[in-house]
Image 1 (cartoon, helix red, strand yellow):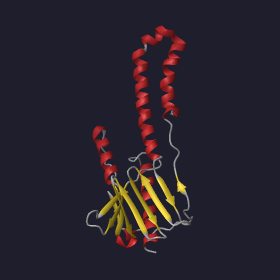
Image 2 (cartoon, helix red, strand yellow):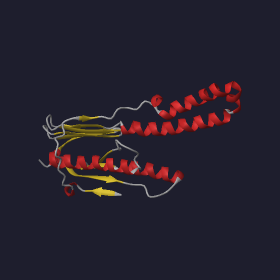
Image 3 (cartoon, one colour):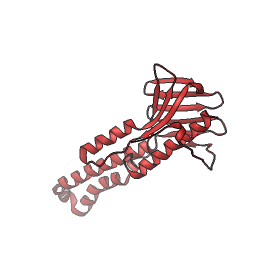
Image 4 (cartoon, one colour):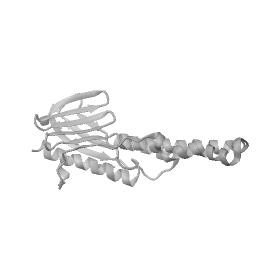
Length: 209
């Protein structure tokens, strides 16, 4: 588990951030494993005819199912990779991040922050923000079902946390997911960490200005 308080990050960015970032949405039908799964029975039929197709039915059906399952798993990760919406507005003063059911937007000109988490959303002045930090949990080495449960736990515990002066909702969590790789891969962990540190830097600059 990695946590970070708002006053501990001192980052500098050489290039101004003035763009909206999006990752291209994947197409399940265009994935290689899907095409292989579709082509497998066609190839068997071409070389062995209908008799060979029937005789090898258990083999190609099992292989096609496995290929489609792995393709769907990869597709789901790529879809999550492409689900982040960021806007970095040094020119218009608007800074926003959206993933899943969570959203945060800093309105630098009006001094307001809009937060959304699940089915709740509120707007606060910058003066109501008490602290911001991030938590990035990583899975310990386990296998099988336990590893998958750990991944789910890590994803739910990780995120960008904003503490505000609000008795009803004292803390908000904004979700993050890697734009490259799996949440449990080294590439994915590093990508998520960079996203979180980038937003630590943005908050330091915008809120403390």
